[in-house]
Length: 356
Image (cartoon, rainbow, N blue to C red; front, side, top):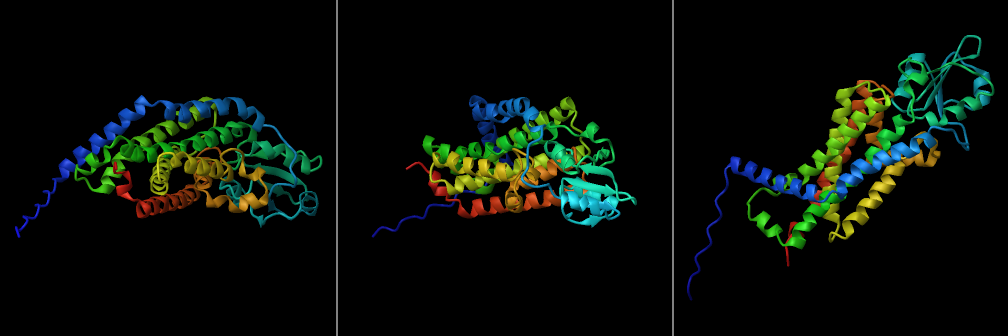
């Protein structure tokens, strides 16, 4: 028998070579995105259409089955509870403002020593239900304030909900594009060539996802940042807004990783993604304010990452929530992101993308 000579192991590349390969793969994905403008139309044009045509509709009032949740600030007022039902809590004036700013409740009713309503603190992103709430006060006409103490009319706008929600809603459609970037390599028979670059698989995946992350971040900066300036939506924390949307981009990339791992082929990717985007966007309050939904829906809404993304964006803009509150919501969104990345990498079958 003739002894076979073992094949020598491929030499390891220098770190500088890894980064050169990383940018080459990322550049390739960016060029493919430029040649396929459908993703850009979905993420940039569709949100503008929804904001333009639906904001006026969502700025009105409609009949609710029951009064929205609220907290009672100041002195106890029996008349108010008779009209509105029992409050979620009885708190101080400062805590009432914080509860509305952080999105715990859409309203706080402040009662004076005489038992009369002295003011209502309302969520600027829930303008649609303000008339309903005031109507429940049965003729009382108190001044309405934003959580930061400014007149409600100077802060509230239907765009405070629709601009953030519709843009975020469409951002998660990019996850399908990111996942298909991996399955596309199998269809083209080029995945073996990418593995032949001898890059660590994690770095190769990051290079494939980077263009999608950049597109999502640009979408947020252009549509939300520019829209806030153009439409008069107040931004209380610009740095947190930018950082929050960067985290949204990472969440989209993480979802793309998970979709690529779960889908058996590129045809299944949009099916999984549509289920996540449509269900998560509706549950998370991206389409309509969460305070307009039934209590059963509000109870399960935190199970959707879009819920926490909306809380971050609203807290940094019209609500003017404290930095601690916004960072806490961002922390939960980061946990969702890390979980989707971890699950996607655990379930990933790299050989699935090889051309048979």
